[in-house]
Image (cartoon, rainbow, N blue to C red):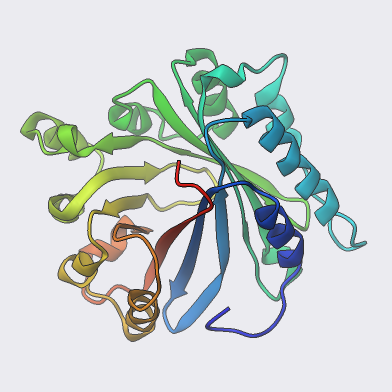
Length: 276
């Protein structure tokens, strides 16, 4: 809590979950919206073992977060995705997280699932997302893997977002770049020179295309993104922290088309326990 001291619910519940987890990856991120910084954003990535156990612990975390009278989670999207049966052997990664604000209605809990070789669930996720950008989504879906994000707002709203990802060995190919250009602008290709992974988020609740870059070295951030003063302040802080050399960056594609970037998410990661 380097940027704000106010306690946010249910951060304490999430902290207990992280403390009880044997090894994993903790991700701290800040959302910058012009001169505002929202820093109470954390993801917990579980190891590849005990997926069902950790999934159930995540559900317990969600239910415990509902102990306040003014909190109500709608898990219907997740229940539909899991039914009638769900094969956890197709899961490559599992995360849970929080994005908390002083207004309870703007706070959310998150569940992120990475599936592989699970075409029926990929199609089900696309149907649940029910976005008009299906063709663009498929244009960027090069692999049998898909990252699926569930957002559960504390006021009962929910949403699903799909993240096709492209690895460096592929996005550096000219034919793949031409494929990306069917969906995104040429400006979206520039940060690829410093990236190891590229992704795009599709959600019917967000009219913007959100592009994501995993920078191989966080020191390259300012070389490819013209950040405003608030974002520079965030990055300067994390440059002094014991985080991984790489980082993720997420922003609306339109921010790449102008001058100074005013809206951006910055993600920094650190392993705890035994690195997996």
